[in-house]
Amino acid sequence: MLERMPPPPKRTNDPERTKRDILEVATLEFAREGYSGARVDAIAARTRTSKRMIYYYFGGKEQLYLAVLAEAYRSIRALEDQLDIGSCDAREGLRRLIEATFDHDERNPNFIRLVSIENIHYGRHLKQTPQLRQLNASVISTLDRLLARGREEGVFRGDVDAIDLHLAISSYCFFRVANRHTFGALFDRDLSEPKVLARSRQQIVEMILAWLAGKA
Image (cartoon, rainbow, N blue to C red; front, side):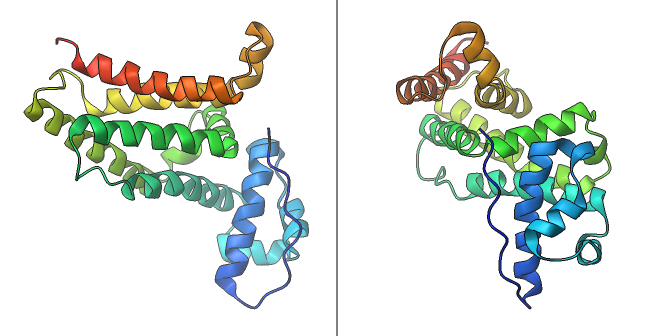
């Protein structure tokens, strides 16, 4: 379900606060309307600022959209960076990362919608932004380290690379949110129901750990 638009914030002379307000409303606008359907005028109206000021801060609609995407990816990468995975064994560290990914996607349906929208555009905007590639490289480095530790501990197979592992984790967590409504309509199962949610959370952890424990 899409999040509701927040009420317009009060006027402020704090530029950083203004930019945060614009990004918050723009996230909802792009997630709801897509890149093509989103309107800067609508974003300006919801932030009690002007279209001119949005262009001043962000440069234009495409730059604002890229800022929204960057903030969306930054939030999950920051969450991963905060995990304490260095003080435990590799299996527990990976469990924490999987569960954090699952919980993040469940709490942030607009993130899922934004990524889906960018895929509709064949990743055209992301390809123009090397900084976003650099931002998302951190999760691959984290998984690389976990895989190396797991191999040293004798609990992970040696033929899985970090990008394949990231794909496996992301695809399950992403699908549950992106396809929730169609899956529910086809199979009469509510993926957001608490018992189903808990079972799915446990299932993805067990699936990934069992895969990594298998023989190469």
